[in-house]
Image 1 (cartoon, rainbow, N blue to C red):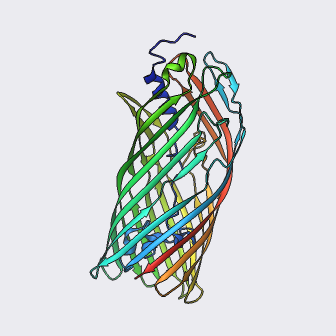
Image 2 (image 1 turned 90 degrees about the vertical axis):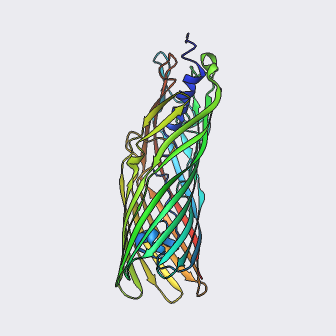
Image 3 (image 1 turned 60 degrees about the vertical axis):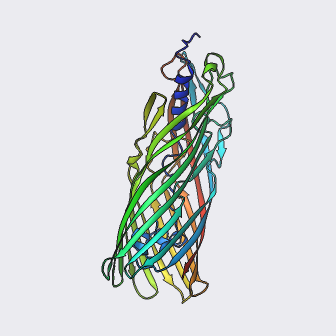
Length: 433
């Protein structure tokens, strides 16, 4: 096979490899983690936008208007199990020859477990104002497949790490209305790797990787109404436009493609979703409070990934959809020291059938939670929670063309199934002083 120097130039194939890396990145459906409060976890996050205190600061900046001076530190351990299975994946080489993708057909636990920390602090300023600061990790995800997995041309390693520092101001407008506003400084770091096919199934695979990071900014606003036994909350958290700058490395390409092995700079831009939340809490009596919350998540902001490389670039359409999540739960004061919580939530996937990949094999999920809050001292409360996460089975389906526009164009057809579930254990400490 004879290829022109232009067709196999480092720039052309490096661009193709970069696009292959980010076409289904870790910045995909269900990479958001709502584990931002151990108290909230106990009731499946069903009353957060309407509740008071730093334990609800992530969901509503108005939550600290009446909290006094308060510190929260928490952590959530996620223990996940998953199975991704080959369902007829194939690859088409130049000339039209299509063969099955050989390798590991059954992949156990590609979605890795982990720990999610959070911190929040609030203090009053005068009689009507309060300020707060929080540190959260809202976007964290890791999937890893073996080098011989059938999914290797779609994904090997997908890692996303984030840190969100929030600065908040809140005000008691009247004896029943609170408002708040916040600014978010969000850092993200990503690593994406996958295999690259050489021009024959008899040749070993090449490899590519994209690593990068960036800092960008967002905002949030909210309000709460407290009238008798009722608490209402509305909040909005903006989408954030991210640009990740980093390095692209391409190795292991052989024969006519060998000239494309390169290390160079690259960048990818994308949007994280906006969040709108509405919540209500009703105190049935001095012991029992019922909670409900609805969230509208603007995943359609993640419409495309825009790639820049030198003087060139491309736009990869993602076609994510907005989703509505819901949760109901309760708080029951068993005695002056112990509060019992429980809740159920439904969280649909924003990914669309026919466009789901192996990087995050997402699915609709149900959450069932229970928790306890124990007053260790008059000023220190320990929150604990346990959440079971049940994932629906989902189908993985993605077609990808490597080295497009050249005589070496090679297309992989990824087909698979994913199933799994998990448990989240949460613990936090709230200190009022």
